Image (cartoon, rainbow, N blue to C red; front, side, top):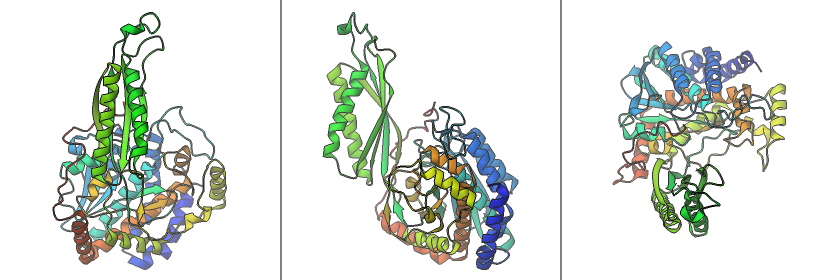
Length: 475
């Protein structure tokens, strides 16, 4: 479906919902006018498909879009070249919308319902962050125009947050104090359903474990060598035995990133990359130390040496029921999505490639029930949420049943199904921000809940410590 059809769908929806809710001067009016530009912005970033901390074109594109609409942009914040803070308006309250834009490695895919990489082994937007960044920026522009023309007091900011996928970009922004003066943070995420329930995530800490041994001829002089790969495998064996003796809601996963150079050479160097997850920060810290102990034992038992580098660490998301209820009510008012005949055919073809129990295709037009959800994934939004009242949601940018980090997510996100979900997200961000600007009582209630959930003695300490952003972690 062409962008013009998306425009027609959006325009009709706004006439029914947006103008009725906010009048001719509501923020949705500005989104309606800029829908084509929003889709083009998303598609440009979808085609760039840049990895974390390497998103130079994607970040520049978003910054240029915001600057062209009157935002003041400060680039390279928190020591990250591709991060930025874009601001418009003045006074309080200060509301920030998060914008992600990094892709994932090895998931290049055309916008077709069959596996068809645009470039073999190239990155792809399998988590929909091109839609994330474009919707957030578009909503920011609409809110800024509405604030100016309605003469409502307040500041809107859009934070360009790189490297969510394993780079913990938002943690460095949080650590740098960029959220200290913010009243509320809004964010969203692409998905296979429309859901604004309060939720949390798992805390996460990751590390690269590098083993060093002694090279030798693997046949002629194996006794003269010490295998770094043996150290990696010994560590992995012990960690895999550990799985029986950890809390049931723990997740531990790894990849061997370096296993040596050739079978007939005793590996002098080897490396394994671990993620450790649990809903509680204290548990993650304890579990990660057990993994480190296994690494040390693996080195000791194989006559090798081991060093490790903490790569990223995230807090779990701190839910806020007051803000979640506001977003949910607005999502119900806006409604879900409807597919054209062409989109339905695309979706049915995609669903033939999926496995497991799938949501009904019609669920794209529905709103999921309002219940607390404990999610097993992790996000650097977690650290933000322990610093300022934060709320998020998801919209159906992918065919129902599509898992994140899949080629099917890339395909849906590069065509009208993804665009529709993105535009719904932009609308929901805009109307929610408008409510907050006009009702300080909601912000006050959300802030009270935020402090109560954190606890009186809470003190934020990054799981990353004082390390610098790993700008080369994808190289």
